[in-house]
Image (tube, rainbow, N blue to C red):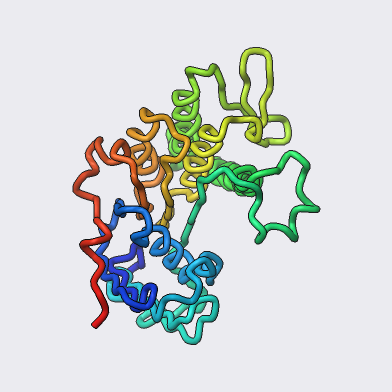
Length: 302
């Protein structure tokens, strides 16, 4: 069987008891537009819930009959609702039981708000500086970033073992290329406020601003948001991913919005980006043909 790389189609029946969604997706970038209340966030929550085991589906309040997600090469993930309870699911033409063995999924929230109740059981174990959901995502990403760096080091070590056959300098630059691009990009975006990306002695991310050292939790909401998005893409490590973003423009400067999709694609062009947005700035730089309007994929159920 050929590798599963992206979603080709999503079918949702019984949305709010009366709508049917039929959405054919691009393998690279998909931008879902529509008025408030049209169901953009609900569609993203359903995709995340189906592919990640139901966490995001809880917000849909049992108002969906069923969901079908069709991957490339006709691999189907079928979930029968009501939501919160997955009555049955099957993968046709797919052997591994764990969907993450086939295609990985990342769904990030970009709203600055107190830590969600779903994290309450973890609050007592978190440092006091972790106060918002953005802080919590950064805290989790720091650990993933550390593992990512360890893996890069192991690859370089392997290059040395094969040094008789490989140009070590070129190969090392290739291995660290995405990380270097990530750091360069973050520094460019934060240049106006004079912040520079650094790694502390314990390999945690910090920023230097003049003579001050700042943790990621001391950044503005927009800076945290940008760091979360780019860091999430970096640690995907060029693998095939379904990358879901709900209104990523929140708190972002207009100039940052214009560059956002291009940077995401440069850090991992194997990620299928699926986002919901209200912002014209996100799509004006060459992404207009990737827009799908909710009204064009929504019909009344017969």
